[in-house]
Image (cartoon, rainbow, N blue to C red):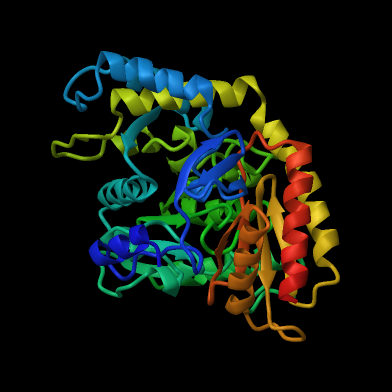
Length: 427
């Protein structure tokens, strides 16, 4: 154990997870690469949990941070803040929500917490619908709407949460149905569930479940849900903390794969917009956002420095069509990974969209999750010079691949080759 690891364990809670048998200290990064304290270079296919969205040490972002820090670092929401207004205007327009209002937070957890506050206040109900296998954050309210036991440490809750089918296409009671049949069955389940409630406030859903292992329903499921929700007056919250800003390639927001009946009532975002800076936020139409009848502020949400970083990062992403790059390079990467994984008995499925790819591992010859194999591949990939993540539902057995959206074709090929060797070594 290194001295730093020992010091970490002495002052940190036991439940604060570290990757790897020999935990890694990352000291600096550039582009799609990072370096550790021993000078080893790694191709980064996880981006600080989908947070380094464009590139490490992106000059445009670091310059914006430095220049703003040289003027003023902090003021709070009690004062006018030009970078906040500039970024809010752009996010409101991009959101697709009419008459949109934007509230900035410091994280995705806080964004989802705010969305739950808005929905329950607007509807006068503490009932929330959530998806099985979901993850929405680590606060008291957000763990209570998280449908993944590994990330929900308590059943105590300020909310009454009811879980809906549909977030996982290839497991569960409807897995053997066609896409159309799957959607119809999930809609019937939702209708039945709402028949037993006293008026739910909202459905919160990730268009692609992140911590759950990059699972997703057929396109159009949430549009079909929306018809049912609207009849019951239930709001739709789209958790875009991991799917937003073009990561899925085909769409700028994950909800746009389900857009037939319009945008969500509330959209939450975080992670990638700050490229490592602490930015989260909520977008909602004005009547929903303005429903609070008490004072509220954010001390650190929307700070001048983080807003300057977000503006620079969003500008770079749009100017360089990183959504298009995610679609093109991500498409090549997923096909390459499918080819490499095909002969590996422990690989159940390679799935994903754009640069959001999951590889699910099972015990060979069965459908049982194989967290041991996932841990082994994680270690082998690191030894080969590649950093990836892991997640999954009932057990942590899915490899999560989510590099910065500026990933090149050559880097995609390099990472796929390393991962292919790691998969073969693990069996």
